[in-house]
Length: 193
Image 1: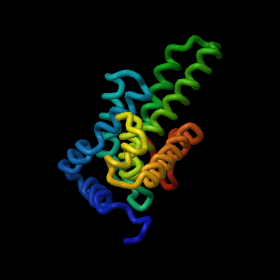
Image 2: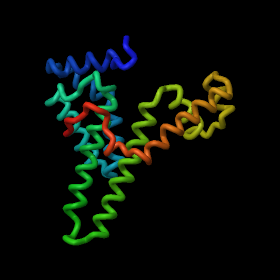
Image 3: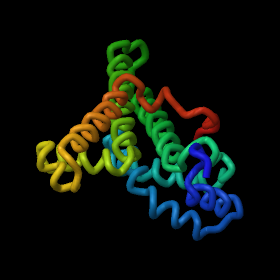
Image 4: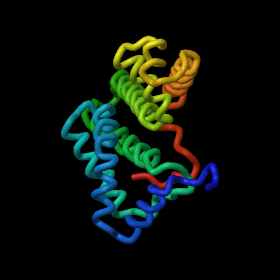
């Protein structure tokens, strides 16, 4: 299989959705609903709005199955991009509706909030989509408070390998601030919600 070929599951899922298989949508929902909901909640800070975005994203996918092109990357990345775009748009719309005309300070605050939400969503996405060995090392070190020696022992790797995984994982996460998800879509993902 070519290095840039999408995973088999992504190709099959896209084909099943294009054929209108309701079971495919259910399977897709089972796989990605928590990602979509948590990412939307991170941006919107509202449970009900995150639920609405989740429904909208899966509705869009059902109605536009050909919008995903498996040659352009993993379905997970595409779903995350759709979620972020929809959530940021909803945040802007709801905040803009509550702003008084000419309130520049509130507008600046909204854009800062949108930026912070986009950075946080990108960090969540990067962590969830990074290679499993890097993610496992980061989760042990930062969520379970293990040092690199304990991380190495838990993963069954050398201490040098544990340090390498942690360093690479942190380097990936550091890109979340410099390249927020909102402004950096992969090529070929032109159609959005």
